[in-house]
Length: 186
Image 1 (tube, rainbow, N blue to C red):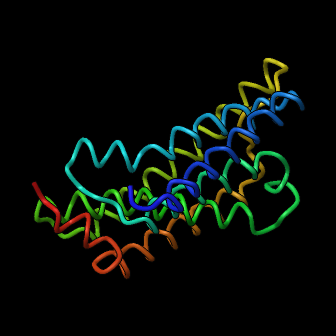
Image 2: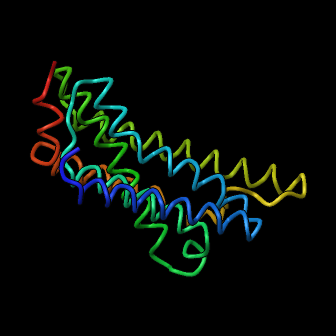
């Protein structure tokens, strides 16, 4: 990692997610607890990828992943229900992260990343929506509070649209924004 400022920012991101975890525990909000654990682990994905694939993330790329994880975790404390655009933002950010990974992997293997990026983001998004629905339905049937919430068919369609927006962002900006991950082959 670069400077001590960068390390402090990453530490602050993780501390924010831990705070969401603690608030979730205090509120007995299983969705916030589980999602903050996943978000916390998600902040380590760049470091894991660097170690496994011999690539080096730029600080802004690490920050991007961290902010996406924070927004997702914080959303579970209420913004998903009260801030109309929160879900759209987090779906777009998540789709760009998934799309960025696919784009990078495809480019490193010499493939055209554009159709793969759109296809994988679409399939992943649809699978996520199915999982969200099933978890919500099973929790309701068992009388438990679900860790994921299915809002409506309209929300599902909007989620897919914003996932596609994220894929489009990667298709349009991936060559430039992810060049350090593609060109740094080992």
